[in-house]
Image (cartoon, rainbow, N blue to C red):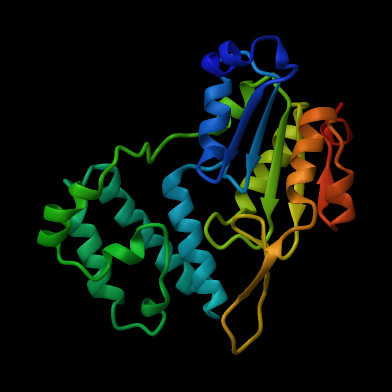
Length: 250
């Protein structure tokens, strides 16, 4: 940001951060360490990275037709896998192996997907210990975004894909709404039928999902909000819009 301001000189009227996907964590964090006019989070998350895996596991089991009992078991596996991830593949193997042995013959087991759990399930402990650290890029698995979002004074715009399969939005939406109710300067637009990337997806019972393009006027809406705070493009596209001024509680 400092370099962009130096290069642009007086041509900049407003500046801020636009964070895409994982940038939904990084953009607000960067804004907390600088003086900016806005922050935009596009199909990001207001939960931590370990929770992302859990919500993916639960959501994909639900999409495969499994109920709350099976989803709870999948969440157990995700939590155990998370201990291994968070320890850089040094701890947690006994519990992970116990749960794999317990559940591997149940019919829902093969339908597990997630940010990392599904990739870890087929591999023995020795393989995870040897090769796991090679893929460790220092992710802050337990980073909690909520305190940063709550402390930001710069206006925020959260754009959510309601049917996001990579960043399940349920808890994020609940947290953003709670922050709005606290009076934080956050606008929210939730696009029905949109998957990760704000891509509209058609789903049919027996076919693979079909991507049909971005939500209408996606980029124009982001630019309009940055420039004027206008949310009309989102409303025209059928998004559920909640503005900060409308949602703050007295």
